[in-house]
Length: 417
Image (tube, rainbow, N blue to C red; front, side, top):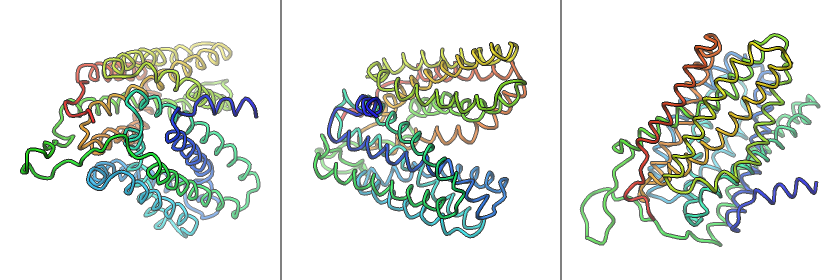
């Protein structure tokens, strides 16, 4: 327990308001871990839904999630992030509670699409909040520490869900949904607490809806869809984010396809990825301040991601023991690259966003995560079926994503608050 407390203290942010947000994020992720581990099992075992229907529903819901962030970002830029974020957290709590009472596929479909849209729309809002309350020199490191705390919470949630699932009781499974709903209310309370006690370090006036007005009004800020550089970096981020699909889709399929490899290897390697993120994310964040440094991290991330694409096919031709060692090295390399990319994209997306339309910009950028969740699984099956050729294509995509980012990345002239 002493070591765990020391680890938590290591990853907590420096300022009080950021610590509150990080602790709330850990609670949020604990609830998410509970749901992710037990949600699908509940609907198959107790509601009687077909697994194929669940898979199709999740795919459709991800499309809804792809479309939701930008309109919500537009609303945030006009009404303020706190009130919109809190309202959406309450809606998410209601939605996950309603899951408990979903009697059939139709209700599951409607709820999953609505909840996924809310989840994805909320994703960039925390970055907006951190940007409002944290100094520029602390912003990226605070995001890194919050992500580390999220991984701690997610791990705890998955482990707790395992204990609950051992009881094989519907009532206990329903408790997972209620606990997840409660976690959103905790985050909402924390956000309101921070907004009351800290106050934003600067006041960003919303973007104008028309170009007319007196000279003391801020200049109109064009939306992200007219910013070619930002669109290019956002598209490149979709490609670089494919490391998530490699880890959560391709890796399990790859382990199953290799003769002699223990299936439990997948869980061990995923746990290693989580541990690396908790330990490494905060350290890496100190090297990502500013666009130039962020681009350097992107280059380094691409090198590591390409290296992992070389190590996996090599492992296929080795003996069982050597394959385990090589695949483990590949996951370590991939995990480090993932962390470098995460820090760099936080900094780039923020520095390339104008203050008056930041929520819209960050919402568009966050769509990359959802887009790769739709594209990634299909691409990963191609990589697996094509062997070394497939891995070479994936490596080329990572390299291309880094090059596009390096060419297009520039601070937005109106990014400074």
